[in-house]
Length: 90
Image (tube, rainbow, N blue to C red; front, side):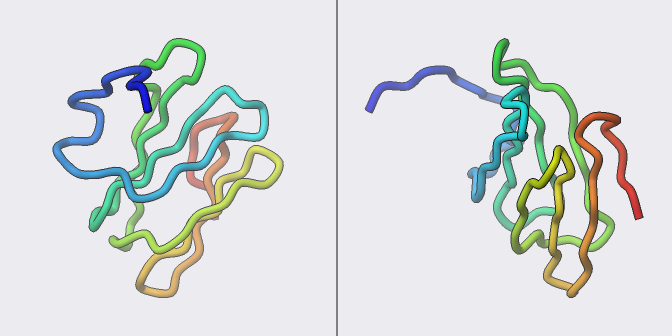
């Protein structure tokens, strides 16, 4: 494998646990291990775009449907994040 880009500093010293790509392909969402952080990276520039902090830590799973990011936490909560407006909904 060949390293495409070094995203040093984006993941705050933690390993990536899960990845998702937005429906339009513009954003890569990176879930960090054992944290409540998600990082959004623009796929065309590889630049850090945004950071999401989930109110209840320890993300367990995430999925994207129609540019909405659904995140399930270890506390049993489900969050919906609008990728277009970059805001937590519900």
